[in-house]
Image (cartoon, rainbow, N blue to C red):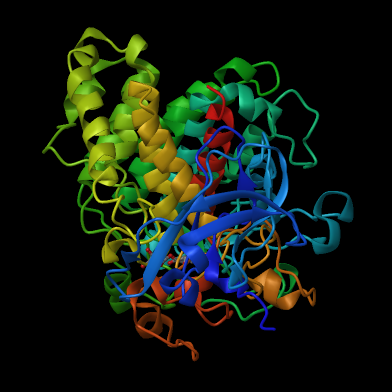
Length: 570
Ligand code: 9MR
């Protein structure tokens, strides 16, 4: 007798809350000819059927033409471990029904940042099997000619230690740190109680700061060193000229540089420092002076940006003019208008000075773009809405507009979900499947959470949960994209330590970038079997366009999992 096809049921491989919606997706043969058109919830051994429900009408996947049917078992609420089965044709990986079912996902994805720390040994006590020596002390960084100034001439050195590795590579980029920090600090501002309870077993666990803030401090302290004290400008990145080989951090010892100051770096830096000033203010006893330093740093970076509004980062131009050539990640952006808006909003909220609010047009149009490293406008709206009660009269007057942006954004995300093959917001459009699409899914989830916070309409919360399901396995490639979480999860992410450490399992708690329609053209890794947008993903370390990890993808994962945990019974 044929084994039931385990790949034919796609679901959140971690599990479900007793009282929340629960959906699995049946694909393949089982979706065409399911025995009696019903599905079952069974014990893990498949022997005992505990619940039977009807499969939905077939849906047609608009990208592949494949049929899916949804198995909704929301009515089954008993905590335990189960599988979904479609007769003898298909069965799922085992999953849990339980309260706090995503707690480990929240903690694990936050712990992922610890594994990305530069400049510190990761001992077994905190890193388990993935313990490793410190890499990149970054105490002697060269000033690249593109960044030279009177006080810091080309070839002079400065110290710029700490921070997280950006991704699978070992460089540190201010722009990408910007949205990452903004997302983590916003999580703390939105859900402080649960954040305080997340224990990630890091060296600082047990001090008076929540682990989320201790972890964020590691990168905040690095960011502060990236500001030139002479003029307030902020270097775009700290980088090798070229990417390292696939070696452990302590074996990657090439010279590193700070490169050109950019307006996007200055403004993202200003936004983060302004927010950090608010967040760390109550910890003045533990961190004397930090909140004031952050605020001053934010104001100075803003001032520099005002003087240098055209200083966009242009790596090709740098390489035409200066040596050595720099070929690492660019995080280049042709348009800083959204960075202006985000920085203005955070500075306004921290200083209560209307001058920041009115310095830019906060509402240039009716769009509410989904946040990404290149598009941070909506982060301003999230923060303004969060502090609606504390706005000055000037800001309060715009509240209907701010809230309108957030609710209409969420409504546009919901549109079409009922026809989407997996029933998720993620994947309604082929445009979702870009480099780092997992962060698209997570950021859509955050957008929905914002609307839920404003309206208390549960449709938004349910849709946000659906995108968490997407990330953990309810998707066209059947992967849970968070390493170490789920039964089918990436084993070969493009992540130098995971490749070089000789351990079979990758470093856990890192979010693979996920399905990317153009990955094959972008990384030219061998092995892509299709160009159907929602199916282009390979679990291979050469696939940096579909299977790299990155801090700006992990942060919204931490946010979404933690927010869902915090809201599960509200
Ligand atoms: O996330 C970035 C993606 O939006 C870009 O399309 C891509 C190519 O420029 O770069 C991604 O960022 C990478 C960065 O440049 C270097 N570190 C790894 C990042 C994730 O792949």
